[in-house]
Image (cartoon, rainbow, N blue to C red; front, top):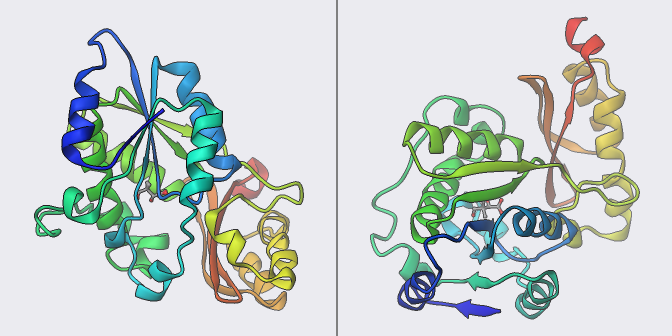
Length: 259
Ligand code: PAF
């Protein structure tokens, strides 16, 4: 497994990959867990070469304290990648990936205004900008994203379509802990009590007959609710469990959608 930390070394490595080879990309911010493992597995199944990017992208953090609290677990991440059969890790520095210091950016002006976009100003500009850079640099044929970040997945698909980008976006099912909490790098910041509470988040979302009822149930259980909204067949939600912001989404059962 090769670890490339500069654009030059990345480009040199990428140029050694034969033109007949299919390249898959798994974009991440590190702190890898089983959700990422499932993306890597799918990427390896569908491509000749599997590349993972590990870059904690500052432009998508609207809250500086959230950025500084973001877990960095470099050695463990590299071990996971090695075990999972990743061919190359691309892990550039900010100055390499943002030679323009973020003077240029990608903005989506419609669907990014709802849900997380309404609560995290600038978040999706940062996500879409870094993802476009990673697509351009990786020259990947397919890229893999988890469905836990449902809105992100839809926006990345929309961007690829809007800009005629020669890449297929593959959404992969959310991987959950045994108590159904969606896997997330943020879970490791939960205290033991909040971790127990967090497991009730997906259950309360599913138990409620409407988004409004879900808000009531979550608040009654001590969550601070950013939003719960039924959007295009999904119930999407963000809550604070203690200091930690968690997001999740579930398919809305058909009978609920009609009522
Ligand atoms: O989902 C993430 O981990 C990040 O938003 C992504 C797609 C790697 C962009 O920084």
